[in-house]
Length: 150
Image 1 (cartoon, rainbow, N blue to C red):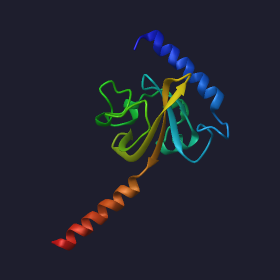
Image 2 (cartoon, rainbow, N blue to C red; image 1 turned 180 degrees about the vertical axis):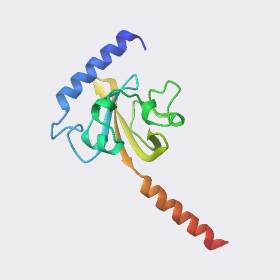
Image 3 (spheres, rainbow, N blue to C red; image 1 turned 135 degrees about the horizontal axis):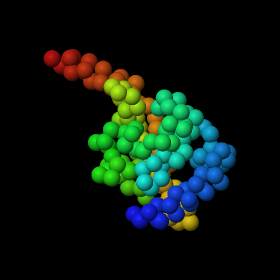
Image 4 (spheres, rainbow, N blue to C red; image 1 turned 90 degrees about the vertical axis):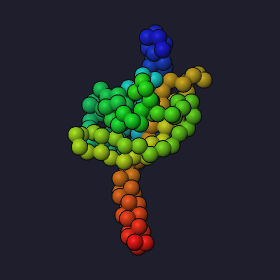
């Protein structure tokens, strides 16, 4: 993507965020979901308070990051700007892993969908849910089930 095109899309995304953040009717309203907004270059452009808490970083720290600073590289595409084998143009939901500090990995469920402005994809809305406890419980049940058969 050309630099001018990226700048134009980023500008449109900024307008979208300014107009929609904190509106009760908007998907960007303050709520219980942990989410961030990602531009087409894989940079975080907005982070809500719940996401700050989940990831253990301030919004200003997170806004300096790219997807590759948060998600394990195996889950990202070759440009490290979006998720491996996921389309920016449609709703996707999948499990992934994030690493915010050395040695700390969190299992998350990711729901991502495009942000359209004037019928053009300008970014993505990404919701994160910590599923570490669920994964751990499933593993314990699986191990218990396997022991019952041996």
